[in-house]
Image (cartoon, rainbow, N blue to C red; front, side, top):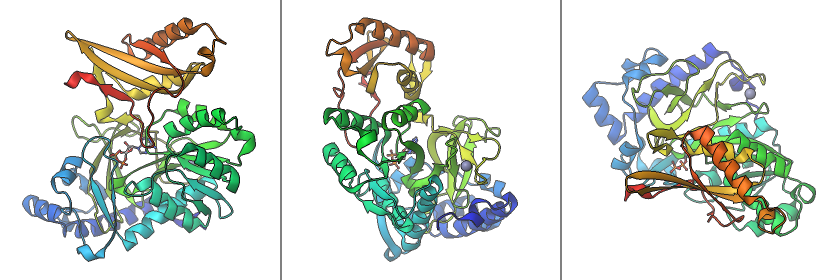
Length: 432
Ligand code: ADP
Ligand code: ZN
């Protein structure tokens, strides 16, 4: 059973007591790492600084740059022979950071993921196809170990090779998949090409969508195409990987497992905590990790705590779906734009296909944004002639959302290159 009732529904005061104990233990452990050992000595910090949870604010933040500067072993808090696994981030925003696990870390992580999957209704009888890359990336092995705890039959398909994915799904009666959202949409074009009806010809009833930001509209689009339920899965390698926060059947925000992560939301500019329920950058302290515990890690992910309790009965607070990373923000003609705003609008417009790309150029000091948008095949087969009407509509809708007028190019389905991993939404040619 991976409905950990005593932890998932415990009283808030009890949870905070547990967090405080685990926080003290964590501070004790981190001290043994080269990085924190030195830092704590300099700043005269240690377990005695922690009397209540809020005392975490006395400690400095840890950033991705700190991890990079102390690459590879500067953050390990146990003798090297205690480590059993290494993972790394995807390197979406620079040199990938590495993370190490002890055997207990793997057990705790697997447990958290089993808790997530069980929460959505996955059971032992399910056939789980893991369409994430196995290897250094955490989405493959992380979910694999979690699903094994539940006892489901796992198909470790890995990423890519769409035709084989579809064949595996059909041959072995896959009921649950784990997939990157942009890949789920791409896969729908392959189903179409093979003339296979994903609703009728597969048994998939549930998908876990993780690893990249996506909008509610994108989720709806995926659910509408496939007819299954799609749950948002959030995590980052620095905090194990997936299994940090996950949607429950309410599909309204992701429960962040507070017995394992101490959560703060800060204003990324002032670095001060934001008011309850306000948007800011998610900062986390790991409460159970041994191999490489991190204190006040700045995720650069923007979200907020959803106020109030969840009807499902779990007391762990919910974070809203990630709006994007602080460093994803585009500044164009002085206006701040997130790629997710573009996605949200595009996914609402009938005729828009499954992929898009934002290209930023500079022409004689004038910044330009071009949005390449894949549209339904019908427009290219001559079935529909109103290409220009659609294009104008997209320009208009985007302008209303982002307040600058982009150039819009309509392109054929599948013409924007799509790899197996995280999708690239923005190409910025202004930096040269
Ligand atoms: P990298 O930071 O190099 O991409 P990771 O593989 O560790 O490496 O990815 C973690 C990051 O992926 C998160 O910090 C977040 O930006 C993004 N991410 C993961 N899951 C989600 C999700 N469900 N929604 C939005 N963003 C996500
Ligand atoms: Zn819930």
